[in-house]
Length: 274
Image: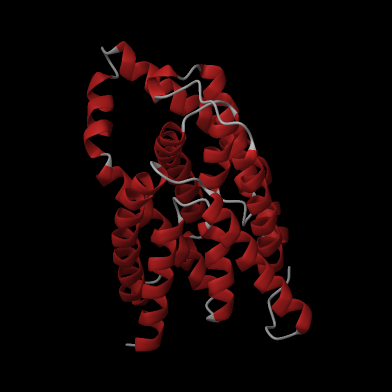
């Protein structure tokens, strides 16, 4: 058993779990870290799918009571039917556009330079949003209309560009469209469930031939690391945004992206290119 490979798996799993639901782009971090660790072969494609699945299962577990309540009420409770319809409406833009452009985006944009650029642009957008006058008109998911959900859904579609951040796009979009910080974050978490399950299923289908039984220990280590890290990150994030803005995430994105671009420009790191 390759201990070095298991350590890489644990590190990548932790990074996926910590970054998936923060507005700093988990995909971007995995692309950059995978490049640094030289773990970007064919097997790594399936590995990243597995640890992403672990992160979304962690959210399902964390919100299990709300999800069970919704499932039980779908046939008879108008409030639960309405909530499910909002999530479905918000899911549609990314689903449709993802099917249309998934392969092209992966072929052309999944590289550290694109990620670094998107991190910086996204950070600047967060700073802009935070400097605007903030007067939320929607303080809970129950107050959202289908139009609000659709707008957030189109914001989420922007996250197909690696480095943008799915959670960052949906949360910032939510703030622009009048959602409170907590409402935007919680709706982002719920919207992540069908979005990430669909993306995971599609990626797994496309890469099914790459699955090998000998990779199971590596996948297991990454899965567990991602699940635990995501559980901690989601709870901590909700607490953090109750009393703080997203400015710290904006500056993190800008600094991180600038470092990657600087190392590429100076030749200090030989980043991969499309």
